[in-house]
Length: 118
Image (cartoon, one colour):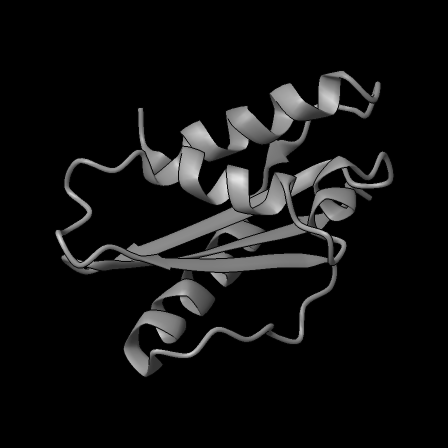
């Protein structure tokens, strides 16, 4: 299973406790989120894009990320956030998600963009 799919499944598992609808993968949002994660890794900056609602996160391991559960790490950051990230993940108004994850040997960036099907 890919890191992105695993992260989506973790988010959806968290949403079941709130009766929020299961988030479906959206190609447009996936492309935007991946582009933003790639940009973040290239520039070494963590900031939001112009898309809302959106969660972004990063982590660094000096010993390398090869043995790190990347999806779980990002989910844990958003799920324990006190600045609205958990609320964005669990919002019942979202039905679609796009996830981008970009890593080098020691650092990863993730972007999750949320939307609604029309």
